[in-house]
Image (cartoon, rainbow, N blue to C red; front, top):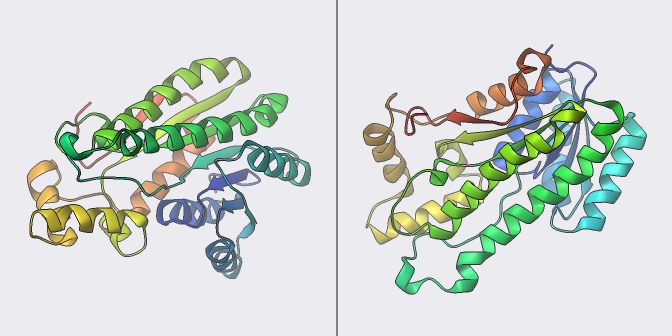
Length: 265
């Protein structure tokens, strides 16, 4: 198993991507600590992982609140003996689809402020404990919006670019402590439409073009990707487990292109 005897904290563990990665981490031998604002989905996922023979615990954590994040990280490190891996898969409702002329300053700034805040707080809390043992992997999450241009996603596109820059610079900050930082950049995941807050965003954008979110994603898959499809949750989760493992021990400061070729690096 890739992650045997590792301790992983998944912020946003009740979400679609966070949940998929948590399942795969547990399947690969990690003990998974699920953190999120709402306890019920975390408990359901922890039960699923336990039923499959894995180990998972959950806690209600506000990943935008420094005290909440620090207290939880301290509790995990004390219980497990340290923290080996973190993934910030926190999702926040934000504006997409509004062009510049109709976009307020508050709606533009909101995702930038909230996503960079949560990534900073969770990385700092985990790094403190990783540095003590001189090992660790911090995973962040972005989208191709960081590199694309077009109307309606100005705030979130800038957000994703900021997360990627944060991840690269953080890798330099923490490399001397043998802590690796990798940003995962999947394109839109069709399976997330039914279970993620992004489904609401895509449906709102699609309605402005008199189409459906499903049709919008299918059109993107066919016209904008080299593989003629979009990534699956299993693919993203499997890559996350690999890059968090010792098999990817030479990788840090990287932006992992999981876009099925909608972007080419």
